[in-house]
Image (tube, rainbow, N blue to C red; front, side, top):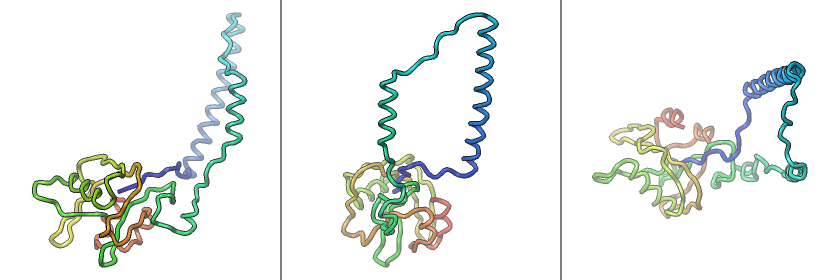
Length: 201
């Protein structure tokens, strides 16, 4: 189960330089268009239509709204306290829902396939058992995104996106945490093949 970023991630320095270069080039060609417009007007001696204008009161209203608007902070109090039981943290990153088993190890919710049951149907059933039926989620695909074999067991991982709703953990869930990709690299997983998890996330 994954929560997508809720704010725009920080702009990479390379992307920032590209945008700056693009604006400079756009301004250059904008000046060329203005010069061409003036030359055509003199040559053809024709008045071109006036450019479209926005109503002044509407512009003033927009300006007032923008002046009063104060964006929320990207760093929340839960980031400061490292509270991993809430979705109101790491807003610019993906968060992954993990649960703790009886041995104190961490994993994604998983279950055994029943006879004749499809993988995505089993994943949906397990999620409803662990987090409740009132949580709105969706599966981008019916196919597993990865698989891993340890001993005689094969685990299939399904991609599931959290949309909305309050999660009610099942009684058998000892503990849970929403972790980032960076935190997952140091997480105490129940699986030994941590490289597979890193590549998947």
